[in-house]
Length: 538
Image (cartoon, rainbow, N blue to C red; front, side):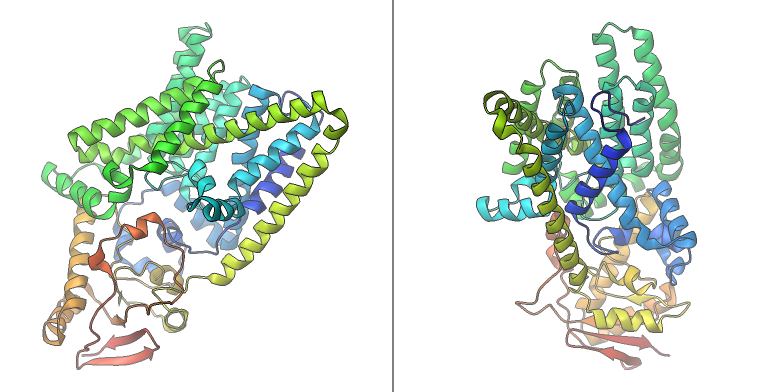
């Protein structure tokens, strides 16, 4: 299925080489990093991880059920640390697909040196060390911008999560160019099955394939057959989305959309929050890719993606429609931007290699050793980066001492009230949390309850002792809260964990700057320099 059409090396050997080099050089963070706290929740809750099965969010709809099934099975029957291996394999698929596309278009697999140079260049573009260097040179991580979409969305993050399965869409393009149109039609729906936000992108990619088939003169019937296969494959995703997330009624759905778009997901859902220089740079890269690839089938993939993404963005800005905002029409950028930037780099590298082979054949013999040396250096840098990231852990808003204390002393029928900006507490400690800002459900009733809980927690923490103790009674009797964490602000100069654009966009009133007044019937269980844990006793 992945077999290249040229070159003497077997496909599996190339895939193994690409997976090892690219997968290790890209680097990862340790478990439960940032959004993994949300993405792993449903699967681990069903697998019996800690006591999170008692969390109120378990009753909300799972937005990524297939991914949750994978996490559940891994924790129940294998070892959760295998997700590191899963991600390395997906990274290998991502890189192998891009190199396969470049092989079809530019012939980079005609000789081993050309392929090794291409692998080294592609790895360098995606390696964290390149982002570090570009930040020092240009003041922002240029290479990271070139491999990600707009609105803080991308296929590859620094950890295993549902969006990583967008690599299957790149593999789909590779197989389509090699004439494997059935597999090409099925893979985008499979990506959407793991992450339903890819549903629109899968449809647009399939449409581009149909246009290419018609353009080639292969017949409308074949194009329709390709579209039908893709539609049948994605039908379960559409049915699940409708049954689980269909509106309860028009008013509730409108209210939930407003909360999601304006309060929680503004950084992803409102173009006004993310339009800027980086976006214009990405558009310029895609336009450059359209020019370079104008005589290849990829011009239809990039062109269709650009038209749908840009058109949907302009339409949302003109209408302010929140339903359209939650469709994320600009999510096509997570596919077309890295595709365009990677192919531009590989096209330029191939042109340079051909020039050297033609004008200085004696120097051309150094290309393979230099490419290997660069790849080894990037792998070493990736290992070092991973070690540093694992040592960094999650020390930030929550102290590790508090998390470990709760993890050690947790028990059934406990619910913890914590500052809403604390996203690591639930999964690291393995206990139910009353609410946190990062983890928002998506069916309308649950969204509204989530918002009410957020406001209740903010009122609780910001009130004086008398009102706070009154609020505490409501939290105990109505919601079953058993423990309260009081937190001080993080002192200036304290090293924080890496913050995503989504974190930076969190409303200012969510910062944990609360008075430390307590209620008379609270029992102190744990205290450190920044936080105190109390049990509520009657």
